[in-house]
Image (cartoon, rainbow, N blue to C red; front, side, top):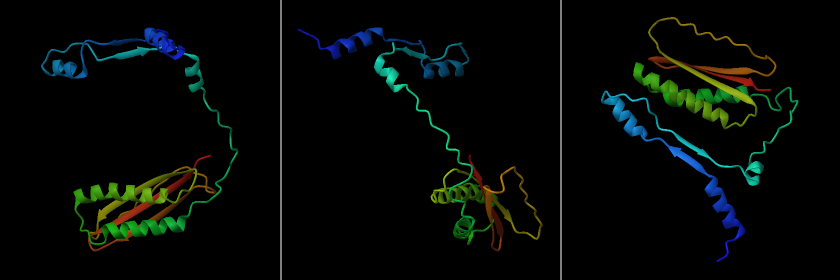
Length: 179
């Protein structure tokens, strides 16, 4: 019975393959550690295969050339993002009462929704930072400030303040251009 070249290559490669597995699995290691008998053993799996010509072709890296693009082809649409901020804050917080735990979760949810809707605009090469503050309205004064280093020609921000009878919300979207 004759073996084909592909079959011989597979057999040769499988004979060159080596592997090792430690004596304890992760589950056994943790069980022994929990019951007070700590043992310095971890699960390890190692594998070695001799490289072939076909593997060298798959390992070639693609080198990208510089674009030499110093500015954005499309500037960040501040007005559209302001409308997104107004829509999201109004839809989520119009009838809500201030509750600390609920507002903690709402800040996370609202910031993720805003980030997703702004990303849907597909403005290339801008990094987005979304920050949402929600607080109780109770005859107090609050000043919120932010500072950062940026390029005033390309970087920008959008902000919107929402108020109802029991809470206020401030949402900021910072758009920083990546060169």
